[in-house]
Structure formats: C-alpha cells, structure tokens
Image (tube, rainbow, N blue to C red; front, side, top):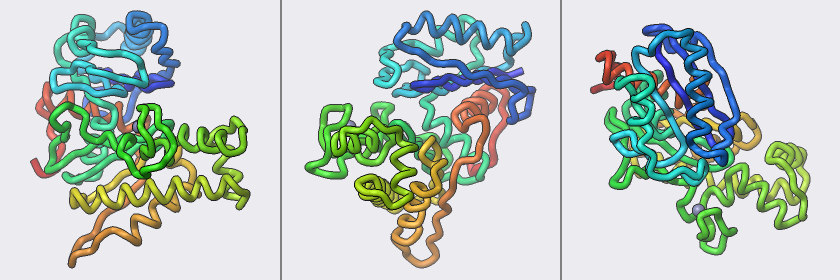
Length: 301
Ligand SMILES: [Zn+2]
C-alpha cells in the first residue's frame, strides 16, 4: 500500500492506496489545528496513517502541504499553518521510510492534473480561503528561484485596493478569495457573513453583494487570462471551494474564454478539477511512484 497526506490550513486528508491504483482504498479527514504545534499534529497524523495502513509499511509515501517547500522536502514557511523551517521529509522518513516525497499542495495538484489530462503546460489554480497556483511547464513542476513560484494570491492587482493579510494593498486574494469577499462585505455593511451567503445574495441580485462578487470574479478572471497568455498554457484547471459555486466560477471562466489572446491555432482548455479525494493527494502519490517505482506518466517527458 501507498500512503498520502494533504495538510491544509483547516483540514488534513490521509489516504491509502493499493499498488498502482489512484483511487484511494480509504480516506480519513481530521482538523489540522496547526496552532497546537507540529509535534502534536505529527502524532495525530501518524496514528491515523498507521491505522489506515493496517500494520503495513507503505511502499511509497507523499505529503502535500500548504506553504513553500524546497526540492529537498523542507517546509520553508507556511503562513497558513504558522510553521517555519521544518525538515518535513527527514522527520517523516524516520517513521515511514525513505521512499517519500514532500511537495507544495498546489504544485502537487498541478502535477496530478497534468498527469490525468496528459497536458504538459498546465496551471492549477485554487480559489478558496486564499488563492494559489501550481505550474507544470514542459512536463516539469516549476518552483522558481525561491520555491515560491505561483504565489498569485499576493500579486497586486489594484493599486488602492484593500489591505491584504501580507500587509500590502490590493493583492488578488484580498479582492477575489473567500476571505477577501468576507472582509470586503464586513468593511461595507459591518456584517460577518460566510462567503457562501455573500455569493447567494449576489446571485439573487442584491447589492452591495452583487457588485463585490462581480468585481472579485472580474479581477480574478483578468489575472488568470494574463497568466494563460504569458505562459502560453495548454490547460488551466481551477479547484478549491469557490469553484463549487457555479455563479462565481461561471463568470470567471466566461471572461477567460472570451478574452484570452488568440494567435492562429491557439486553443486553451479551461477546466474544473475533478481529481478525488483532492488533486494534492493524488499528485504526491504520482510523484512518489515515479521517483521510487519508476512509473511514469506519459505527459511528454
Ligand atoms: Zn497579499
């Protein structure tokens, strides 16, 4: 059996897979509660993993996590989890053996999507509490110079925009993410509404919810259109909680479809993620199998 874990800001998924299957045999979710410290998290994660493995040692294992991860599997920094400079791969290797991979969740998700869709120039964008992106370019995960490529949530899209959690003004996620929409509405009406409630009111044409939601969708769509064109992508995949909302994601996809630059013959595939239980888990599974079992996805490498 193979073991994969996806560490998110709120929830952590643990999944075990039979050899050669990308459909999990069993999945369990638990609250990450990273504020209790890494040791506490590790103990809970290992306990659940061992139970799901039924006493077996995993052939390969993988961890996808929020935050910047370097090529050696060190978690450099995760503002969402509040963890810094963690030699995650080394620590987990001592428990489950050396055949493991640790990867940023969006990079892992991009890898899974590229494998499933046989696309070797692909971006995976998650639109959720925050906004992040993973890239597979020419068949390889692209990390950038500081393992932080794809941080589009903190690209500045509006000079005089709202203040972001990073301290700057006008970041994409301050305008278009779930938390961004919630904060904007609170600053206008004083209400503490969930993003779902805001989008429901927007869908019913109620102001100021409609205006805030449409602006968020438009800014996101314009940013994604620029990324699609700048990188000449073959495929853009959207995932994360907000993409389950047809009203919001529909506006985003329609704008991109109508506005991307069209030299002769250019066709960009715009998709919603359908990889279960989530593409991060499946991405690290595929990465670990490729490295340690020599199983390659046929995506042009
Ligand atoms: Zn920011």
